Image (cartoon, rainbow over all chains, first blue to last red; front, side, top):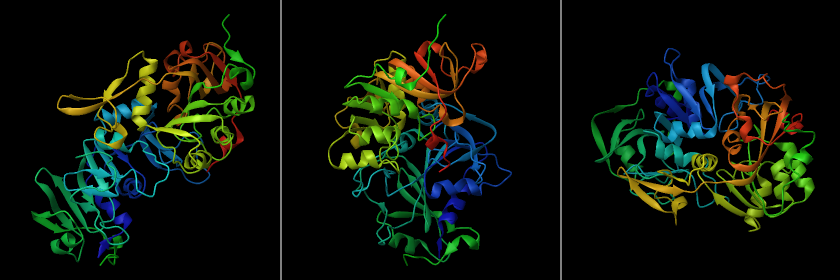
Length: 229
Length: 229
């Protein structure tokens, strides 16, 4: 089995502690906020100048002046604040945002991240990706374990232009949870029905298996037949 | 009596000349001075350098100015934004220049110019292709990239409320780049939703102080800016 996109987001949400200040990238990361338990207070930041962002606005209740960095109409929770770009990026570069959850094209064994440019991009764009990858203490990556052609995305060395070197702390995929440590990659969890060997088979970089490595505990609704099997 | 108000956007942009550098506020449609852009377009000036987070949308406002071939160079973080087809078409034909800057670095370069600083060292982009050719320095064991201030001839912004002495407030996520841009140009003009008497904005709630602003134009929002998309 493998985790669905929502399953990956759910698994990330499990790891965000109360009181954390979190920036969510576009794609799977945006789903994370929906899986924070109601009794856990986590503050979501958006780089265009929001802290304490709530869910997406209901259709018909949008505020035309209130968007997130993905240009979606959002809401503000009680206690939320709005501010300008320099202050927003002070929160990011200054190390005040505790977690960034980002999508990735490739991650290397040493924590190098490539997520801003593919060879097919004719017009480049970087947005806030580099500021987040360089500035935030814990960079959590969500992605499918392999490309849609089945090629590994966790590599010995990135082939695409880097967003930032040595920045990723943990990788969440449809197959596994992997930590980046000074000694290399450590497999923490694997999807139900898999084993460490099956994960390694789809991972270019060598994985050490943690002593307490275990099957992921996610609700059955978040599981699908593994597409890359 | 000081009076910075002007009746029309045409008057507010009257000084724009061929080859001018323009800081253009807004993030998406939020805080974008659409009518002044239309007035610049109508004026027919050329060889402009525009500093803006994205590349505009469609063929109105910034998209229209670019489509008309008025912009020689765009300095942006996310010019590949959906809808930015006017820029993207010209870029692929090699007919417009691009300087790609990480979003936080773009904001801080503008802030530095407004604050009278000669630039700054940032860890963002160190070791990546966006730092190529730039001066670097190891500070406290970490590589930093030197970034220069970004000052301009003009800044055009949009706020929510303004008064005749140039004090401005913004709604929700309209603040974005508008706050630093108001500090970093020789001539600054703001479109506002409401023109209010001096004193109507509480002393504690002035977001952009009148010292930074040269012209205030009271003009209703561009209809496209009010569309929920």
